[in-house]
Image (cartoon, rainbow, N blue to C red):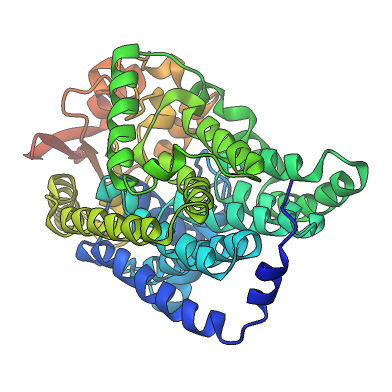
Length: 475
């Protein structure tokens, strides 16, 4: 349950100028910690997927109908809105939104800490959060993808619940869910703070329902339900190599531990009034574990509760311990920022070469099929996908977070191959890029794709091991 502010804490909140001094500092830190994000046009395939979705939506496409993904609609809409304002040639506007998302999260955490432990703890929480927010592989920490936009909603949900604003807390939980399903994990600490009392529960439901129902009605209600909930069973269930999964989980956890090295020593000590924060951390850990994929960006959800728990512990320690923790966090931050600025970009260079080849081989109005896991190729080439399935994953059950899982047409999303056949028959792609390069989803393992290539296409060259196929000319 939230602590009742002490008289000294209440008095400290009346001091003028607190936020006018703190917010510029947090804004500067948010910009500095996101600086590597501008070092390259794309950080990972998720950014590419969202960029392609946004272009299709801007051209009249409909989410869950003409373009699909196993994600709620909020982040694709953010991309679409940013592109509408500035054009779709650059992700710079989306990265500005990511900076604002991190700034909002830091400010909400600062406000939570200030309410509980005073002005100094507020500053500590906001600064520490931004310093550790980069403590992952740069392609996970710097990309403007789903998890970054979950964080303001989760922090806002706790902020509202801490003040007993249950309707607003429900709306914030809904916004976190609409960024990505695992954002709904924040409901657990909100329920903890509510004490499961009837009044708060009713207000939570009343606040959460309109955003979710509105999103469903604004898209396709049955498609929204299928792609965000009922159709994700194969993705969320485990199949594959335990060794691969464990190595990924431990590897990304070790990177996070290095990034959060300044937060961990204070957590050894216990401080009063932290039960709700531990529930938040446990719920966030459950979100990371869900599906056993353990991508690095999943771990971002752990950072807000970890920051507040460390701040609570530092509040009980001598002031010099806080200064040392901030200094250590700054050093770790500098290390990860250097990594982000100097990191190689092999995957991006490959996608660029494929995009250049696709652009040369097709006209602006012709459709292309890139068979692989690099949807950013469509965006870089400025070509329209030939199908609503932007990667091979939904058609084969292939996932980058698994090894040894069943892959093939039988493991596809229900009905996906029927849709694929209709789309490629009605509007055959002018170019097919087989970017499988020996992966389990290669055409030789997929009868439908193999027949399509044999009947209508001929090989026209290779790029980095990817094979280009053009439509056979009728004689």
